[in-house]
Length: 163
Image (cartoon, rainbow, N blue to C red; front, side, top):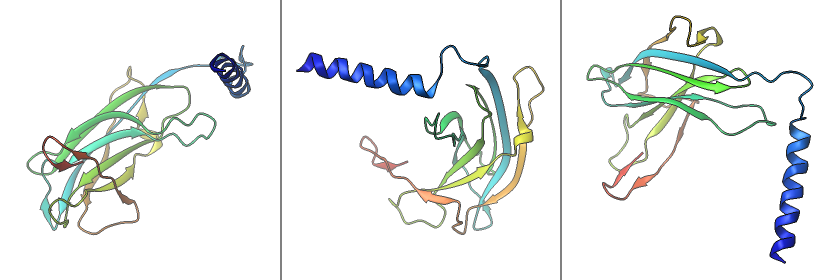
């Protein structure tokens, strides 16, 4: 029975893959290294928000090739709330860069952090061989909850912190 399950799974997988990607492809598939970056300052209640986690992602929106958001880089804001982030990724389709700001502005202790999403304009995507271009978000005020936010909780058992 196990052997039949493996054979069925292999045939099913081959059928799905062969329908999604035609081999040989009718046109050359080009994988490109694409980069993007941003700068800005995180503010909470009119004060700089230090040690705030910022992640740079490529958001995949195509259903056919959806593999979730790809993490490109991660950093923390400095003591005055400023951050600079830059990352590159190999992709076939154009990347859709965004930053996620993980913050605890106006939250109670042990409450899950909020995640604020901000998109980087397309013109700030470049190849590694060209000069780095950074989109300047200016001040990102996370005091008030916006429609671009959600919560995500993962409890780290060794230190009891949420991320």
